[in-house]
Length: 305
Image 1 (tube, rainbow, N blue to C red):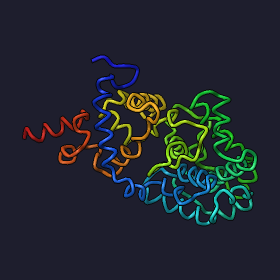
Image 2: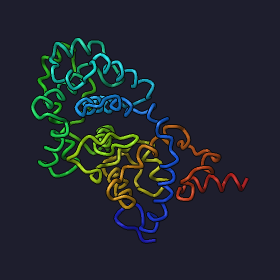
Image 3: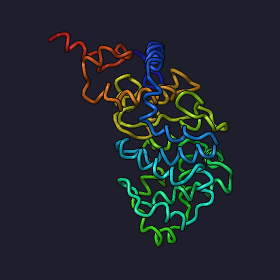
Image 4: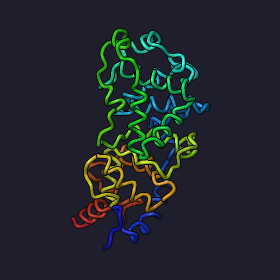
């Protein structure tokens, strides 16, 4: 079968599209939002509060949700009713008051202070995080370049006063990677999905200067595994190139909104319904069974016993 420049052939794309659409329609979005970091920016209505809370939530959304969600929730509550107003007014003394003693896995208070102070400066100087991102996109001409410029600008904060107030940074590169390397930058692309897509039942769609067609899939282990099963990629690593290949396949399904399946597919893996070791009963009930290389084999093997 002839394949195009994506992981899918045109015929495979035509077969997969209605199955993915049915799968998307069957997803209980509201139930899953309560377990997703997008719940945090959805608390707000002001666009600036949304983007500030979204970037904070996305940056810390690694590891187990039951561990990072209380950390994000506590920070936002202490920042008051307007996260945007809080970061606009934030200084080193305020960062010390907010973040002394903060630890979440790789990150300490100094790391988070850089993020908050960087957002505050962007809002004061440019008015929005959207303007900061678009400026980088226009200057560098690629999605990778735009994200690199975005994190560089956010990290351009005098470090010595922060180190004196809160101690040395520990996981700043994990929180805000700069330089942006060959990794998929999953959490940054997740933040961008929230900002650019929608508004719908999941994403907020508050940015107007970036089109959903430009988005890159927020690649994690769940998306990577399911994408392999569905033929969206033949790559097995979690790199930027793999995210590009998966997104190219998704553009064959929907050129204007390629990452619209991301939330449903990711939560299908997160929920345990589609785990790394397939469960025959789950595979047999899956809307995507007839497009899944692993599911079909799993069901046939069970029937042969």
